[in-house]
Length: 297
Image (cartoon, rainbow, N blue to C red; front, side, top):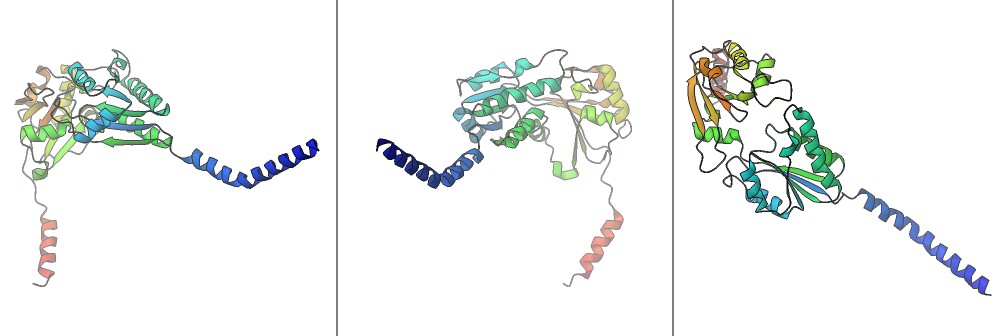
């Protein structure tokens, strides 16, 4: 009798289990396809300490569980630590003689390790996190591929500061932007009637991936490349945005021929004004005029 009662209970339980099985499978599938708990926000804090950070970037920093930082100097890191108790600098990953690409990969892995652990991660970069920054783009791409929420919040970049400090309106005659070394290594079509902006001019010709500066010899090669479109006495501006509120931006005007003589670092930019006036396209102007005449008044 006991055995019969046990068998009855067992069969009853198995029947109920069979009845619940499809729902349980559906629930398991829903749980397995839901996004993982970890998340990543890559934010930019601008160039000038404390002046450029947006309220949204500040909120991401303050509400994160872990904050990683790749910023311009130790003062900025101390400022970040006032907003969050767990700020981890990624600067120590850089090393003399170490390829920068290896450093960037290690940054990505350090960030994603915390995301994969289920934490809300904020990665802080100076300037704009998507400008001259491989690691943020890569970290966001991989996080999304693995099913994590990841996005980028823009910040004020050196380009924004350059327009303000030098009084350049890129919409007036146009503006061309190149990494200096890329500009040297590849034949680019330059329009001398527009501004030419060469970023990281202090690293001109650096293609080894492990040096943090180059010298006069590489800049002389740059001058030879520029000589295809600009005379050696053409005036240019060496620009560096102010990183602290007490600093002034570097805005040094000089002829291109003097470029090998001056001190430069990776934060310096070369801004070259137009060397000639805009050249009207008479054929296009005539076609547009004909179209205007064809429109009824």
